[in-house]
Length: 387
Image (cartoon, rainbow, N blue to C red; front, side, top):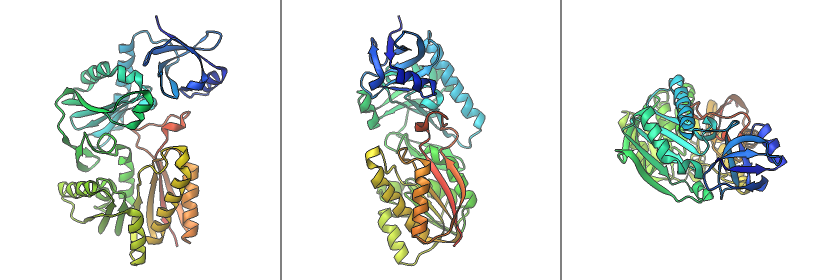
């Protein structure tokens, strides 16, 4: 028998507005075990939806369907097949992309990334973690990978009462693999690299930056050189900066792998380096700012705003007239409106006249659900300095 969870009127209104999350504070009663697939009802016992139940998270329910799910295997196969077919229809260049993007593909708490002939998954809630063997079997059936790695080391798993671990679930998964993101070849560290190995969500923004780039380029917070490598073909030279020695080593190795010789990779604190470049009178025609998330929770938003303003102020001071600034934020808690306000304030302080060329977001293989603002986390503004 399918267990039931009764929710409050406020939760009913939230569901009708199209948001798939129900919080712990709106649970009236539950007979579910951790990770159960449950029937959600209102207080009059009218069926509302089917959802994944979490016994520990503040997000107690994650809706998966408006109807009852009677066959879990068929349900998962259908959702996985639809997600994979969508990525195939995108005709993404290269062989590195996201195949499943959690709520946006209606499989909450599940991430699946492809790197060459290997898959990396993350099961980030109790329900998907409990079903990881079934998910693995279905992915093997649908994709036929060489191997499948569970990269279950994000701290967010602690909110679900889950441990942090990295383990091979199927086949052979080497420590590093070769994969292409668009036109660029990368050596990807599947077990220790950021996220699941690469920042796949920036691939299309790399291409947009390359299309506008020219002259002397600067890629701040380069990680493994994503923007720098993409811009190198359009720029005379590119300076790539990161505070991580391993990131700089990776950037140099990726440049060599792609036979790119006009990138200088420099290990330095970006905040300090931007100030020193300005003092030295340096100028750049194309600048990219792609920092890590400055605001990982609401409490850190004020400090994040100060950080975003500082780097954008410095970048605009370094940018030549007619040059382009590609500036990004992956902090969900700093939304697009606030991010634009911060960049506008930085431009005013820098006494720069700036036009907005384009507003972008994460790549199409990381879909955004219209009624779920949490799925829109990456903001990318392309600006042109007029004076």
